[in-house]
Length: 225
Length: 250
Image 1: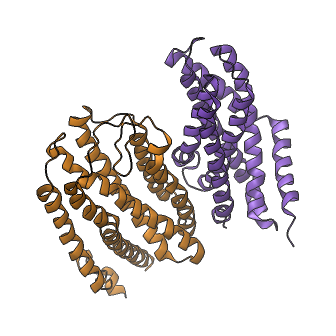
Image 2 (image 1 turned 120 degrees about the vertical axis):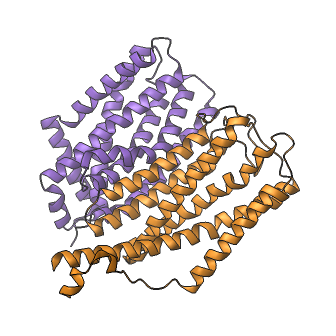
Image 3 (image 1 turned 90 degrees about the vertical axis):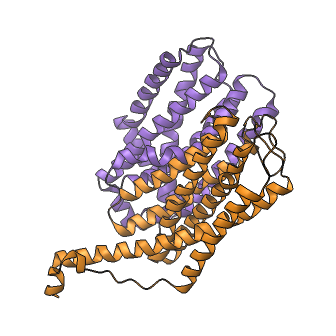
């Protein structure tokens, strides 16, 4: 008899949340990395209060993707190191439930980091990033690459090179999210008419659904013992 | 058995099944077909009024992308069938598809760069389509790296089937990007070129007689023939590996 799907997802998610509240390992590392990355970009590209929208949206998304790589790697490595992954595989739960549980955790942690970055970048670059549409783009975009990242991190954590392989495997695949999300964010920030950025935003949502469905179907094959 | 293991490497032969007649026929047809498309593209098709002789490179440039498309498509098919049937032969096809597709897309990039030098006055530019084509190559290079990093054979096959299916998204993006991101300078042959496209040419009758056969050849015979040979090579390599293991254990 299998544990009901929702119950299993909730259990994995609450475990991840509780571990994070106690250790503050993932969010703090990701947030610190993001802060550093924004500063490094500012120096390297000489961004200031007159920064252009495309530069700011590019910096935002690249930083989020790199930060999420750190988080996804760490989150799966924890499962592996403590033998948790094997116990979950022994338990009578569906693979898809494990996937959704880990995905939600990854999504929430990355989203927190993203939400922290918005006011920070608003202050640094004098652009209003605290816009409802920007936040919506961020929620959808982060969910998208969390869905891919969770699947790929599960794969790479079981390989010899571990952490080194996730960026190589993930960056090319998340490109569609980066393309559409950066485009939508740029349009929103520059105050362009809605018709101009709603296209990319809609496409972002569509790609998100396609990838989520693909990953749900394929996840059971990356967790075979 | 002991005698066999001690024999010199030169005497060790890995007997594989002889080449099937269909493969031999396919090879001959592909080679002849390729020679024919070269004659059509380099000889029979007229010289382009604006671009001159360099335009002929399109008869290889565009077809090679479609060859890569077929090869990567076979990787997806091989991956899906492997996951469903768990038979190693489908994984061999998926691997062969990646290698052949990667070679074809490198031909595509290289010929594009050679064409762009006189026409765009640069070897490379960060145009959306060029960027996504380069990322497509990197994705499949990542496939090979990832594959080399997984030791357990069963796990490797399953993981790489999954990755091969996901990687195909970059192929689709490269195909459709000039319709998503309008500010590309890459010309489009099918349908109206983007406004900013530079180096478009008209699909005149000369272009059609040279391009269509080449396109069909690269879309079907070229990838299939080479993949078939590559799959047989993989079988031999696996046999060699088994033989090595056997020799070591004795």
